[in-house]
Length: 276
Image (cartoon, rainbow, N blue to C red; front, side):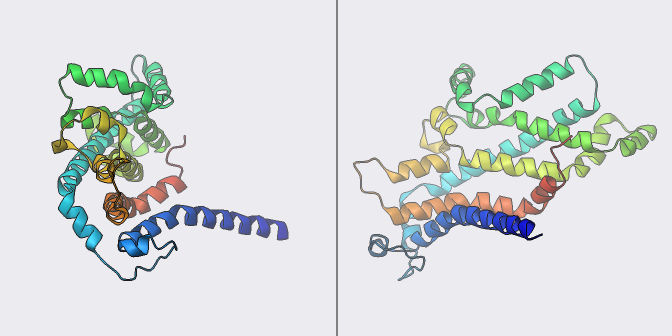
């Protein structure tokens, strides 16, 4: 009995240590964004800005085209999230409920695609975007992210775990397959849909490498690219307070999205939403 309590306490300690190690840097960055240069370079670590100032945020909004970058990131992330949720849900339902030629082979290829590092696909994807003349357009930022093996796999596993009785009753009543999917299966799969939406939005929001490769103009630059540009080169003096404020602005939308969907996300994990 004592041994089990020790293991339980050890588990709580590890979870607490892991949580602190992940949250503490963000909290310190948040505090830095409200400090002046004198306090930032004082040589001591402080979580209490003294004096408290919003000059860093004023400087960021004045000297960085952050509103345009924010719009671009939000537009790309939202369209990509909605598109991938729709495509992955329909594909996952088809793999779960329908029988068609080469079904197992196609699903096997989807699983294989999840094991390929994204960096491997950058060169062929770039040439495809170039052939379509989509370089430096929203199409190049959005279209490759609409299709993801993880989303199809997760939705297929969720639909597999759902009982067939309700759908069978709907078929007897004359409902079409699409109506059964849209009005019965999809609402029941809401935790999985929200979980997939959270993963997709955060991935799209934080994406740096692909937007860096396929964009040239400032007009469609996203927030992560603007952050790298705002930092400047090694020859320039970095304004760490303003950089911290920019980083906070970049982080807030992803945090809000997670907090809004955390209930469904946690329920999906606890209920084993991606298990057979």
